[in-house]
Length: 315
Image (cartoon, rainbow, N blue to C red):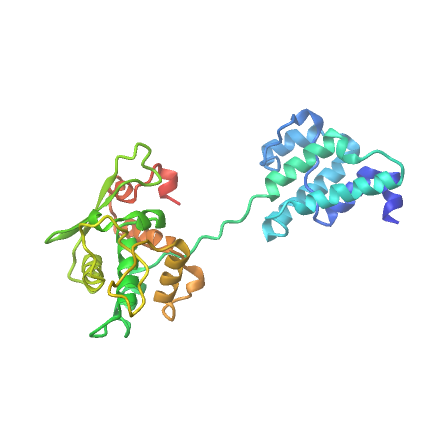
């Protein structure tokens, strides 16, 4: 039945597929070869609709409602394949009926382009930021406040607290060398040789203050460095995998990978919060959120976080 409909009226069939939520917008020729993704917004839609042939306007209205509905509920919003499947299925039916393919028409080609731009934008699921309360619970948890905490626990706590206080990305945490860390009476200073926003590779010193709180990041880092027997003059990564018990050295010479750092963060907070909503970036996001809530001036806030623009800082 549907093959017969394809042969009789291919454009009616496009409307049929649109009603099923698998095809994108209908775009007239005078929209040009590049179709903006915001074609469905009110002002542009009015221009688009007025230039659409009258016999296609009902289909265009149906397409708008279908595509916006798909975008709202996430139906196939991350994958362009349904659009291709619909068009090429109609192409096949057209050829079986002895007719030319519909994909050769500019109207259909532009329609597919617009639907891809609009429906093909994935929904970004941001992870939750780490809060001061969660960090306090981590430090006060039984395995951390033990009289003799394991080196693994000390490393996890230091990683979390330093990542939080320094607004560090994983790419920055992974490149910190032992010789880049300097301890002082009231603070610690960590040198970043480069970062994502350091275009000229000038480097930057990140200053982290000491505190009398149990969640002091400087104290946690000192305890980890001491327990791991890390020489602060060596040019080796600060955060490294642990060695086997038989080895004389406490840590290996290479740095930890992103997947391992993510495991450490999730394991550290397991039982304290929903770890499925956390990632390594949750440390940076949490520190930035707490600083913003504390009323830190934007100039200092942006400099400490190494943001290149206001939009990036605001997430």
